[in-house]
Amino acid sequence: MPNITLPQLEVVYKDLFVMQPLYRMTRQWLMENNYVDDKNDVSLESGMEILYLFRNGTHFNPNEKELRIWWRTKKAGLPVGAGSKFYEYHIDIDWNVINMTDREIMREGKKEKVQHAELRILLKPYLIVSDISKTPILKYFDYWFRTRLIKKNLEENRKVLYQDAYRLQGTLKKYLELKTFLPAVERFHEKFEFI
Image (cartoon, rainbow, N blue to C red; front, side, top):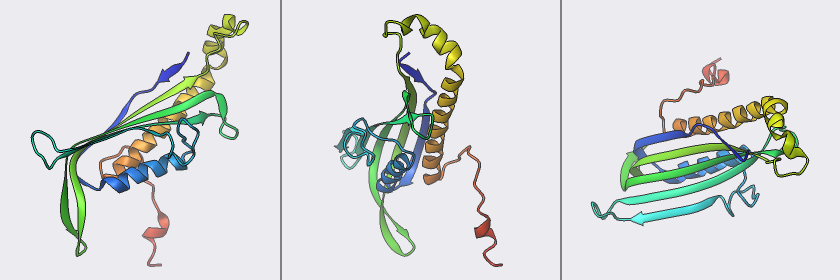
């Protein structure tokens, strides 16, 4: 039972945005939620990004740019306190930015450089469960172990991973000011500043 794939989530956006803060904000979210790269680096600098492709100019427009980025992250599963070696959460993030052109806009009296592009971020969460069917004695109990003994724990880990991926999608949509399906957090202290 190596991989349990969950439904893919996607963010599609075509308008003005700034790529660098979006890139940094996504990386910061992964660090805050204890995701690491394949080399178990907490800062996500050594092995998270397995592809960074930047193409300057297309055959339609020499000023257009294209950007493809692949990130691979993982996190130890539940129990939350110590982590589990039996479960491992993975979120693969694939960025695809096409028709990107640089533009300048006026914001608060200052010129700012922004990008106009079609952005597609694909989140692919999956859960890796250790395979016990290769051990000599436990291989006879593998089916029973998965369907009866750890079924509830497996479903709980799937739910936690899907919630992580859904929160990441909501954070990306919030940054891009798209419609989200997460409940809005009310901040009572901002509403009553005049008191």
